[in-house]
Length: 228
Image 1 (tube, rainbow, N blue to C red):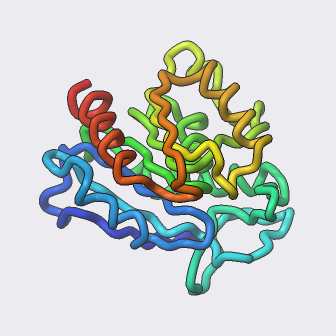
Image 2: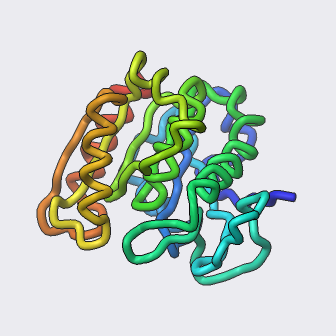
Image 3: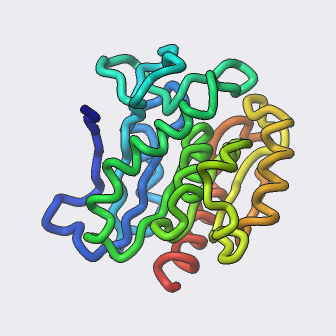
């Protein structure tokens, strides 16, 4: 059975009717990481929920796994296994991660005015994948120093996004040392055909987040989520 560890910015009585922004951390991190960004982002009528990834970092998910969730604690967590080229054991691992997050999100989505996903690195890969699987559920996506995954033609509903492009913020350093060139090329091609893109680059931040970037993200959320 799936288990979820979620940190919220608001106590439960104050969440209903707000805009939900789900924070999805990167490979090897944890659910408290991205909460440090929230003081720089809109707070009125917004609930931030930061979710722990389902697997201890470094876990090798079996090819025949039926669930993304693996019981255990670690210093950091992963949405699916990755090697240094950001490749995984197979697309099923990505499907299982999407299904895992939707298992938590779908039952609560109706409690909120809208649902937006904000992901860093592998968290952006998950955020875009969830939006591609359930475009009807997701208002917008914020991607920081990340990418979109290739494949999944049998699983994603990209045709729906092509017809109704997804508002997407994508911020990165063009010299990011972690995200491989093939991932950037694919993401550039995918966002061009499926999103209403707001793209920004930030020199010298490496694989990180810039102060100016948070200002841009705050503006994006105000325009595309809170005012839309």
